[in-house]
Length: 389
Image (cartoon, rainbow, N blue to C red; front, side, top):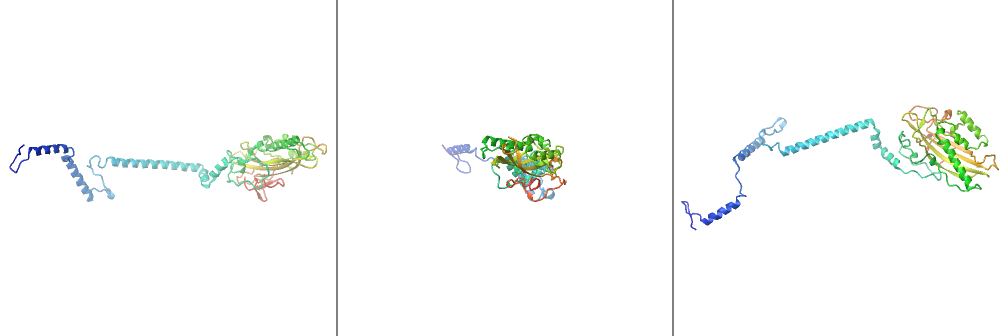
């Protein structure tokens, strides 16, 4: 094809025009477009306002910038500010929730401050360990030391043994376990078993029977004793009929005044042991040593644990050798001590001494003893200064 010429120089050939047209058509999608007049105006206005702000214009009180009144949508009111406002609302909600929780916590502390105190002092953790501890196995022999110290804690109506080693002790009559009987010094196994069973029955009737505990006559216990034993039956009758006598019934029977106190929960913790052994010729002895823990209340929420330890040796005598009744128990020796009570067993009752700050009767005297320590002997009846309740 030919070339076209104009006034300014040689013309462009038809082939060159065709190539130019193809290139223009292929590159038209990627070619930059010239901004519209409206876009140029907006860009120019924004650039001018930025320059004014940089020069210190448009500032409010305290030097804070005011947003431009003619900003286009999205410049200051778009997604960035909406997101920032949403985060602010979230933080305010969290603060309000934290304030409510804090106020509720203060109210709980005001009502029950022991919850926080117990947590801070470790009492709550110690209480949890004690509550989940396994029960102690039966006491087969006398221990050589006092029970391990536990975190001191006051008993409550809901948890009367809280803070006491007795928490892991067995309960009631089941705690008085009768050992397996064997023949002893000419006494056949059957008679030994019978003597052990009757010794347990006496301990239950004298220290656990509800009628005995509320001060009634301990008929079941008295029925097991030999009426032919010199002096003992008469002495017990005098003690029951005249409770103010020097040898009162509490030396052998656990009794409380029902007009003054009542048991808490009906559970008595018991720990101890018994064994059969030979005595004098024609005598079988049953040696018992038990501690009873009685939680008592005086009508309000005050709880006191009365701890009674009794060491009683029973005798079963051969009627062909002794003045005795076949199958009955005689009292060879009995010693008792009690803690957390008033020393005067007036009216034949034990009177729990509640820790309310009010002096009640003669207070215990002498060395401080651990009422849960069963490693030694009881040497005489009376109340003791307890190192723990």
